[in-house]
Image (cartoon, rainbow, N blue to C red; front, side, top):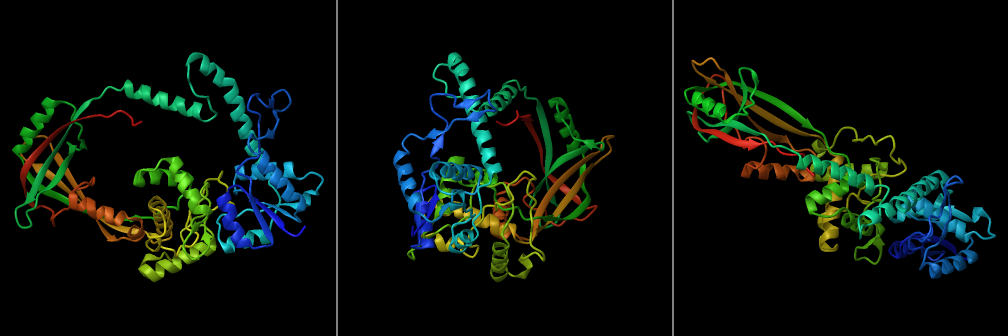
Length: 475
C-alpha cells in the first residue's frame, strides 16, 4: 500500500487535482453517485421508518470494481466529492461500498471550496469525517422524491397520456404557475390616463424636459376617465407654469452582495441570456479547472452551489488590495463589506467568487471560450463590486405648479439624477448603463433637468395625454 486513493466525482476534476497533489496520490472519479434506490420498485419501506433500499447504479459496475481494487491497495482513502449535501451523500455511499473489512479510520472526508494548489493542500492537511446529519438530509430529500414520484406519477399518467413524472418540487411549482396563469387569464384591464407637459425655460438653456402630473388638489393624480382627462388638459392649457420648488437629495447606493447560486442564475439569464442549466454547466467547468496555457489547470471560481454570502479573509484582502491599486483609496470602504446570510444557509460554504481576485477578465479573453469568459466576467465584476465603496447619486426633483384662476390645483414633478461618485458602479457596469440611459432617454427619470430656480416661469411646449391600461401580473 504505497499510494493514497482520492475519489472525486468527475474525470475533469480528478485530472486537475492529481496534478496538484503529485505522485503519492491516485485520483479517480466515481462519475457521480454509485448507489441509488432501485428503478423498478419503490425501494422505501414506508412501514419501517422509511428505510431506503440501495442498489448499485446500472452502468457503474466497472467504475465500482476499479474503485474497490484501488481502495484495497491504498493506505488511506480520501473521499473528496463536492462540499454540499449531495457530495456528502456520495462520500457516504462510497465508504459503505468500499469499506469491506477495512477499519473506518481508513476513510477520510476532504472538502474544499476552490480547486487551487493552496486550497487543495490545506484541505488534505486537515481531513475530517463524513457529516452524517448532512447525509441524512440528502437521504430524506431522495426518499421524498421517490415517494412523491412513485405515488403521484401513476395518477398523472392515468389522466394525461404521455405525461411526464410528478416531482417533489415540480408539482408544487406547477401549481404556482397554474394559479398565476388563471389570475392572468381572469384579469380585467382598466384604462387610466397619464397627464404631463413638455416644459422649457424662458431663457437659455431652453432644451425641453418632461414633467408628469403628480397631484390634483393635494391628492395623488389618478385619472381613470377619458372625459376627465380631456377636461383637465383644457383647463391646464389656460394655466401658467411656475417652478414651485427644487428639491435636492443625496442618495447612497450600497454595493450588492456577491453571487449565490440563485442570484447567479438570475443575473446570467438577464445579462447573458443563459438558462439555469447552462449557467451551472459553465460554472462547473470554471470550478473544476481550466488550462490557462502554462501547463497546469486551475479552478477559476469557488464552488457554485451555495446559499452563503461568506467570503474568505484571504480573498477579501486580495480584492481590497486590487481595488486600492487599480481604482484608488476613495473606491475602498474603510471597513470591509460583510453581507448577512440567511439563517438556514450552509456557512461552511463561501459565496461564488473568483479564486484569484487579481485575475481580471481582460487577461483571460483570449484564453477562455466565449461563454466561459462571459460568465467569469459576470462573477468577477460582481465580487469586486461587492467589496467596493457605495455610490453617491445626486437626485434633483423639480415641482412645477400650474397657476391660474381655477379652483383646482395641479402639481407636476420631474426628477433627474446624476452620479456624483460611482463607487462600486465603476466595476459592476451600472455606471456605463446609467450613461447610456441618459444619452438615449430610456431610463425611468427625466433625461436631464436644466438649472431651475424657485418661482421661475416656464413655457409649455406640449401637453401630454397618454391612455394606458393596467397590466396583469407577470408570468
